[in-house]
Length: 126
Image 1: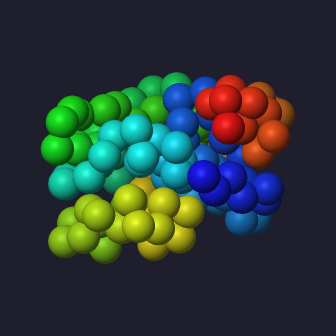
Image 2: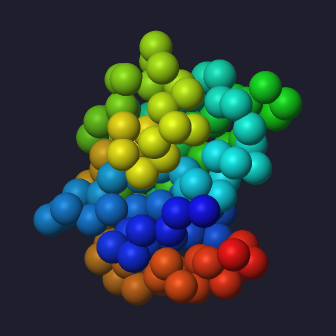
């Protein structure tokens, strides 16, 4: 499994890539493997403020539907529109083209609560 060192992680299996004052968010390689083939991503929080650990959307796999939890507080600035026609990008490229949202960061102190790649690897037993 892949756990890029430059990313931060949550206990709910989301990853975060910080670029200046915005964050890109998706689900981890571990999460997409656990879910199986992803067939639909439903995110309806564009331009809305979300709190840390609040649900910002759902991901639907063949066997289950799973909530997506915001790793940080902020406003959803963009939803990855590639996922509309190609939700399988979450499986094939979870840290690249399979990103889900781009959001502002309203509370930088929350960044300290995210997990490092090593801590996340330990959490999932990898």
